[in-house]
Length: 338
Ligand code: 5GP
Ligand code: MN
Image (cartoon, rainbow, N blue to C red; front, side, top):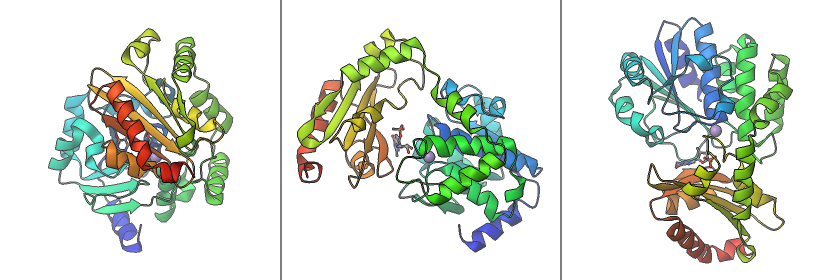
């Protein structure tokens, strides 16, 4: 964020505003963590802020301080719409294209509030009046930490803010192991622990949340894994029927895609998950090294994300989708087979 934008945002926040904070659809730890951290920060400044999520999110994210104040656009549609129409500032967090909020898009486009984007994905669109966009950042939570620092308020970080920011940095860095993790990320984490982030408890609350059903679903996913050694690729499929068999709950498939990358020699992993209700196959892509799954998802599966973690969708059947996916690998043989 440049100096002029910081001054302008500071000026805006020096008077009472009606603020709405919006993370992306199917929010993850970084989206909910950054939204709640910013919400605590703004309310502590005396602002009137609320968070509106486009839809529901997994139970393992619902313990964070302030969670009970989050509005769900699908469930609390009237209040959510009312708040958006009255908003003077709208923060959008952890996404950079209004298509990422699903049904909420039209209402957001009607608003004449000042838009402030804080996000770490590539190729931002230009809907925001003030943008803090940096694809080199580990997480939106790391950026919210920087944002608070830019505004000169680093000493106002409370234990609530520290815990929420810790969640997003931890989940988006795969517990501090992805290439986006820098020495500064670790220094910020150290500071957050000093400020009251309960690191061990957070790891436990996010990751030790298995149910017997989820472990059985994981077993099914691993059994379904297709390994294409010559393309250094592994992919998993889960049909709606399989999800139903194991009583699928939102968030149950989180992290499954990463198992492909734990195989020696595999640099590209995907998971295809059928969603009969939406009539789509939801896809997650992961890679290690130079192969950009962001470009791959963008080009072939109406999606996007980061160089090493992205997602997309397909409207074809599962069999057609995986056949198409395998056919695409031929084109990437030069990169994937080196
Ligand atoms: P995940 O596979 O964990 O759902 O998402 C990995 C990354 O890809 C996240 O940064 C997420 O924002 C992005 N992503 C996932 N699905 C989509 C999609 O359908 N469209 C776009 N543009 N990004 C996506
Ligand atoms: Mn993120």
